[in-house]
Length: 403
Image (cartoon, rainbow, N blue to C red; front, top):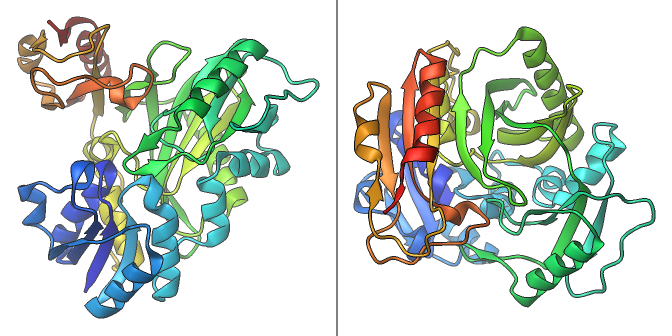
């Protein structure tokens, strides 16, 4: 028995580790270069890395048929969600339905469906970056503009007036964003700004229609007008009423979108009035090491649970409280080139320190200061004292930086 993982980047790598635990073989479909190139440790865990055009449906389907024992096709990155679903349908394996794919991979379709279902009341409209900018009568700023089909906060920013929107669209038009080989379509959604605190809800939809909620994750964001996620905290002791409101709303969103199977990562904001409003829904494992944070805080391995669901393996985990876990991303500050970091050594002394990674080497040019590429590394923490975990996250954000 084996699975195919298309372009395992970030969260998709968790499938490789989970499959090894379950004794399931893994074939990786990838261009096998750049960000999609697996390191030696991961290569040792898979049956084969197959260099293939992951945008070519026919070529991949032929290869799946040649392999013979493929029981599931899974997306290793956001942009592979449609192809994984299409290949799953063609090969007769468990897969996400087309109707759900059309909504989770198109932010305008998603907002439209939530509005129809009464789960969102904010104003919004669609723009083509290559057409004149026209704002519908009655639409009010501030607003947020974002590509309908990108991930990682790429191209997302807050706007305060019509002129800022025109300038943002012009910038977008001059250079369409590209991420891991996927280029934006050129369509943008403009939505009314949602005030409040941001969270994400993670879990898995079972084939029988039941839903396992694994986490309510607090999102830590950088300064506006951008929405860079600079940290996540999992396992907090939320008040039961608050937890119930978010749970009920999340289940209603999943039902409205008709997400039929697999993991989900629902981002939402809770307004000052206590009302949750969905921001985006991804039908894949969450990135940013949230899978690992959830596993440490609750004992639920979303990657393993997903494989068990797709492969019809009876191995449902029972969640249990196990403290608080968090990740703090290291800010780039105002630097454009990486030299060396200061402030990390003191962090390592904490018994709550788990791991860290630095993405750059000395002399490397740094990424944008407007999206996930602005982060130069991370530190992960875990323990029973939530206040101490939070203080460590704060220390990373204030004490660690490029010299």
